[in-house]
Amino acid sequence: SVGRAHVSTRSVSEDGRRDCWRFLEPGVACLRVEVVLTPSTGLELRIEESCSPDAFDWTQCGVDVVFDGTKLCLQRRPASYDMRWWTCPLENVTGQAQTLQITLCEDSAPWNYLLQSIVIARPEKPKPILPSTADVEETLATYMKAPNPAPTDIESILDGVPKPQVVEPVGVEEKRIAAKKQKEEERKRKKAKLAAMKRKEKQLSGELPPPSAEELEKERKLREAQLATARERAHAHALKEYKDEFERELEARKKRADEELATTPHMVELAQMRKKYGSIDDAVARIEAGESPVDPRFRETRAQRKAREDAERERKKNLPDPFREFVEE
Image: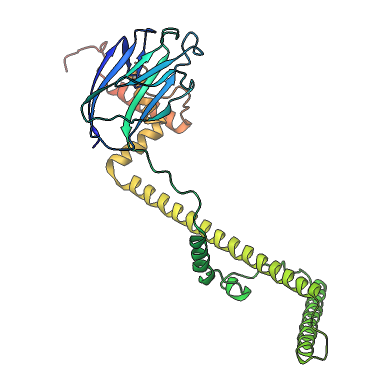
């Protein structure tokens, strides 16, 4: 630890809202911190401060910082918009009690200087920005040898992916034409494959000149395009499976929740109340406001109204009639 400190202030108020000291009166406001530091080299003073933008004129703000009679800075103008660190090396640390004094200059505007924290510590080591050449080479070597986990052959990419759905032709003639077309295409494909194989063999044996750069480039592009389409298909299939599974899970959850609602007794009651009142919270709020719990926008069905009226009639029938003649039986 660096040491200990004691703070005394004059015309400085603590602003809890901003969590900082406000220096109120220019020329009078000052904060004195008495510190006892362990003498060591390379200490620096860091002050986190700002110049309050809600002052009368925050272009006029100067701060003096004096450490043990040595002027560290005079009339310094802090940043005006947010808290910023100001740093300065501390040389003459004796190990005895020494005073750090921060004063708001005479010609500053009042309310102006805000001070959030004072730190005396060794400077933080800056992180090295660029790695050395050796580091770069080592990283490269590590990753060069790493096998590529993504499959690059189309068969393994499309493993388990269903074939794209072809719309079946309807009608005898259409079917015949479609079959004919398919056969033609297959024959063409086979022919092209055989021709390519033969050409390769001839090129290898030296009968034909080796493929030109353009041909190679064309082949590479074709391969890449095939690979990309295969990957897209596999990806779309995986997404669809995820989606289906997610929907199934939601369905199952909903079913479970409904079963619970249908079996737990208080849940059954709740469900009935929901049916009757709409939202229960709203009903409670209406009761608290001294209204009827029934939602004014809620319309009864005919059956519900009939049931209610029948129940009321029954109740009326069973009530004692005050105008009945009390005759001796």
